[in-house]
Image (cartoon, rainbow, N blue to C red; front, side, top):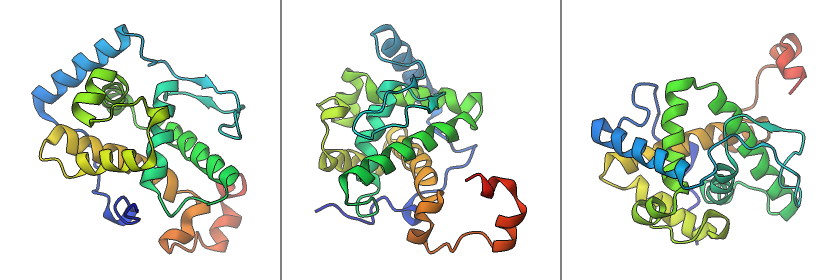
Length: 210
């Protein structure tokens, strides 16, 4: 049985702009080489744009601006492990919530700015490129075939790793996912946040359009 508190918002290390994937010169060069090799090998690195809805998986009208089709498959494997016990049990609602979280991850990354986007692209390419996925993540299957138990084991390995490259990779993955999941009003009740005051909801247009 998976530990339901392992990847909770409260237990996720804080991720500042300065500490974001702070792996040193060696790590940066390694990630850069992986990213270039992944692109040359045919890994999907361009934004996925519109994804056709399959089994209520994605909103066909949503346009991905950063995540590639390979990145989407990566997060489809990781989100159930990151939020075990917090996702709906109903299969359709569960698929919808996973898809909506991935869309919000994409929206959040778009706001990061070019330097952080560049580092995230390197990290995602490392996890999507089969040789480095196997060597560093110890994940033998491609992400669509990875079980929640296997994804959870991978996250825990990187979380507890003494290698800064891997540990910071876990921080980046869990932080952006936690913000996308727990930051949405559908999940506010899971964190004890009651939501914004009524006067703020009435006054600010973004709440009316939420």
